[in-house]
Image (cartoon, rainbow, N blue to C red):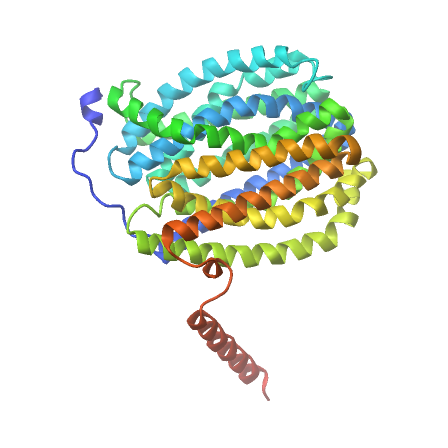
Length: 458
């Protein structure tokens, strides 16, 4: 296969309209994959917490998160550039996947060097108490993690959400099996947990390559113009991607700086559980990335409806978790992690509000304004930094949770305001149901009650 075979199409066709049925199908696929991912992640977290304790859990979180910054921030930026090109029919899927292979090799190699160099530089501050060997071992899987991320985004951008979801679910299951083998069977401690994390990326990449070779003719040769295009688009949102990562995970390193790995271990459990509540918003957002980019009015209608429905479901999840977390967390993870149940409650308001940010971001980016998403993320990061530095020394991990919750809420509110301005729709469209939706829901409810009563009537 030559570069000419992968030439970018000259004709530009409009993407398919963002149909509600297609969005539901894609959301269901991503949701099912994320259910598998969440289940395996929680199971892995329970195993690591039980076996390693708060200190070991904290060291593991710090080492793997440090490497994940280099494995995700740059690839996500380039990946969203690939999605943008695919959605506007300026690239073929084969071209995108071939570019993913080359980018993974390049970015992964550079990422290993940057991860090790930066870890050495911060070994006495943000990574205090974390052996550099753990970071080096975790970075072995970095190129594979980059490749997995780019392939998933390319498949999503081409509308092959089911295939991307299956590959993601398989990698999650492999990761859990490796954690069980390293910690439960072989009892290798933190070293084994870090090795399992790196091995999961390598095995996932190997399985992905086997599947790709069976369905596509890949080549490392790709037109230079395509590389430049996706890099140019990626640079527009790279600052936002890095800021978003820092907004999610920088608090762990600041906690380590002020309080040490034990506090990080407890806090990491609460944060992990809070982040898993984004299961549904994440699935909806991923589906919208490949379903928007066509007619502006249709995209705005579908995005507003998706945000409204998801937000109310998240409020219901908020109430359930708030009632169960204080008693369930110590029961499942152990008494040493009992404070995580109370800290989790502080995350919940911001987690719910960030639903708007996750669901509306695809509309903002696919309308050609990714720089606005970057500004929102940078603003949220500024709030995170300021409040963490202010609250962690005085309030401990509870202060970090409050800081994160406020920053998440600010991100969600800002995203809603930007969407309202770009689409011309009022903010209430993101929260309140239109009259015809309420009437339709009432009619369906009345019909269900009538049928039920007729069935049970003598």
